[in-house]
Image (cartoon, each protein chain N blue to C red):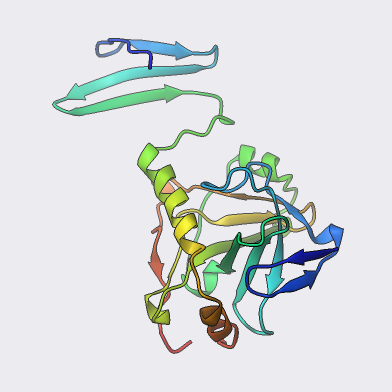
Amino acid sequence: MNIETKFLGQVTIEEKEIIQFPTGLPGFEDIKQFVILPLERDSPFAILQSIKQQEIGFVIAIPFIFKDHYVFDLTEEDKEELQIKSLEDLITYSIVTLKEPFNSSTINLQAPLLFNHKQKIAKQLVLQDANIYPLRFPIEGGDI
Amino acid sequence: MLVLSRKKDESIIIGDQIELKILSVDGDQVKLGIVAPKSVKVYRTEVYESIQQQNKEALSVSKLLIEQISKKNI
């Protein structure tokens, strides 16, 4: 199927690539179906694009590139919600808030996106208390 | 909004699975204890709102900036 995307024009995707967010994302609770669209090869960034609403496209990145030792707990309920059987099912991304100049951009480590890439189910987890990380963690090094 | 007065160590029950207890009151600070099934997510309101807000802010990106970052390697 073809979808209209925020940044990449019309893109052809396959049904099996569609990722379900059963509870949406905070602020976008009604938007439940997304795809991950890569940017250039070797780019650490990708786009999380709503398949229905063109204007809903988030820049995302693997957080571990920007923050060493980024660790948090998953509850049994989180695992159930995501139907995680093994940790290998899980991919973590974070939403990036891009700013100009680039080195004032930040990445959201307080609420990572968790994807079960086998079952294509995802959620934005809000970390609390023992797992506190910044909502706006600077993407360091304007030279990347 | 339903308004109830409670004293320290008193509580209220919401539905049949959620209990909210006043643990202590110190000036304008109230410490609440919450007993709820783990499937019920409890957030400080400002934390949840700040994430909603940040998600919205993350959407306002120019296409030009995307073109710039897509060429960046790490």
